[in-house]
Amino acid sequence: MLTMFLTFVKVGLFSFGGGYAVLAMLQQEIVVKHGWLTASEFTDIVAISQMTPGPIAINAATFIGFKTHGIWGSVLCTLGVILAPLCLMMILTHTYIKLQQKEWFKNMFKSLRLLSVGLIAAAMVLIGKSAFPDLFSVGVFVVCFLILWRWKVNPIYMLLGVAVFGMVFG
Image (cartoon, rainbow, N blue to C red; front, side, top):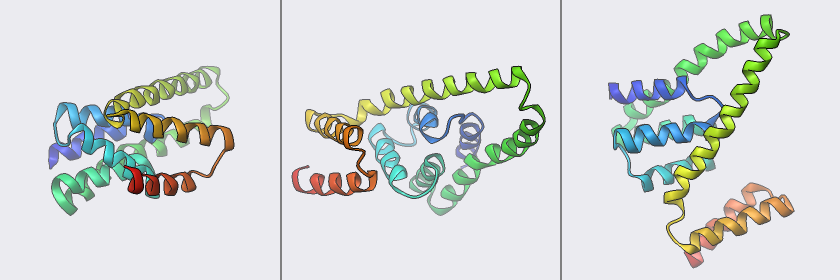
């Protein structure tokens, strides 16, 4: 369990850009490096983490910890993933207030935004491999994407609709 805790501390420490950006790192650590979950199990946990309230990285850590080591695993993984960002945010908030007008500081944050976009794209590619096992899955994705993009439907309605669709036709 100590290895898992330290893994989530590392994930939390380097999770710039939020939950979606951290998915690639989580997948690499949890599925590829340690083999604690299969790619399919990881994809399921990401889906559950998106549907439940709260930050995706914390939700995923909680679910992964519980799946592998029960309640204590859940507690340790959750603490691990929030420990480093909590400390960093306290330091960064203090620093940001002092340095927000400095040009080099502004440039650093521009670079971090670009990094976040790259990490999100990497997560999309990695999760896409196991999320689209057949043409039916690709079709559901494309239809949902188009509906959300074209008509700006509330994602909650999309989740409910796709859940019903999956129960009937899946």
